[in-house]
Structures are given as C-alpha cells and as structure tokens.
Amino acid sequence: MQIFIGEESGYQMLDECSLVTAPYTVKGEVIGVLGVIGPTRMAYERVIPIVDATARILRAALNSQD
Figure (spheres, rainbow, N blue to C red):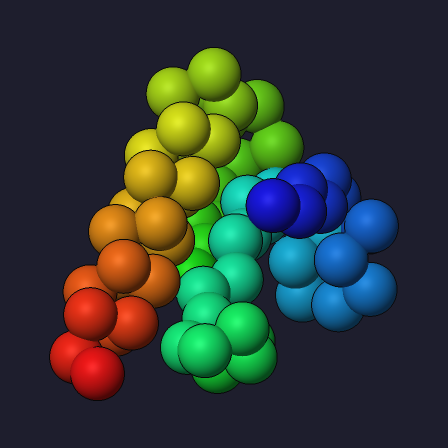
C-alpha cells in the first residue's frame, strides 16, 4: 500500500490530488496496481481499507486460477 499526497506523486498534473495504491500479484510477481485518485482531503480512513481489500480479493481471484 502506498499513499501519495499532492506533489509526492512526482506528476505535476496530480499536484492537487492524492493517490492511494496497492499492488496485486500472481505467483508472487506484481502484475498491476489498483488505485484511487482523489482530492488531497479525501476520506483516507474509508479509501485505504477499500483499496487494500479490493487488491487482496483481486490477488486471491487471480491466484486461484491455477
């Protein structure tokens, strides 16, 4: 899980935004990142658990296809 607020993302176009991201893996290898882009004053206490749970569900679904 990573959180970037304002300029921390390194992308000038997102200076007024925040990103909450979580990677998902298949067989231990990161194949993508799920994230939410929102205002810098977003409800982090709600967004963080949703992003985390969604990434875990996606990871479980992708890894159960073996």
